[in-house]
Image (cartoon, rainbow, N blue to C red; front, side, top):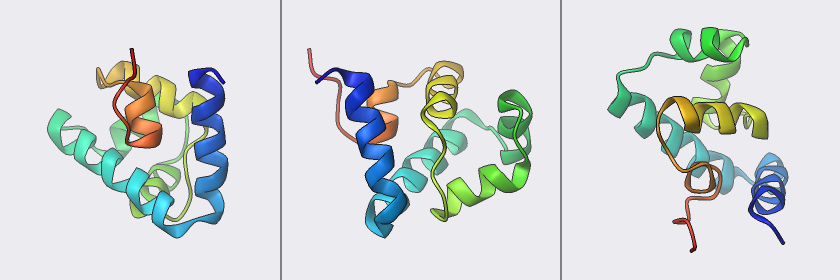
Length: 90
């Protein structure tokens, strides 16, 4: 299974699992705080509403994989870590 498929599977499971949604929300929140990024800035970069980003940060919904990929690139993060919480495997 390739990394993209693993990330998609994780995000799909997150939709129905509170624990996974909240863990993803915590990683997003930590990344935003480290980078000094507001939900409004992230929303503008991604072309989504600020409410969408706020829902992600609260663990209400999860961002689509393309949003995670773009955020990881913008914030200089490993997308695998952002989506799964696991370090990148060599």
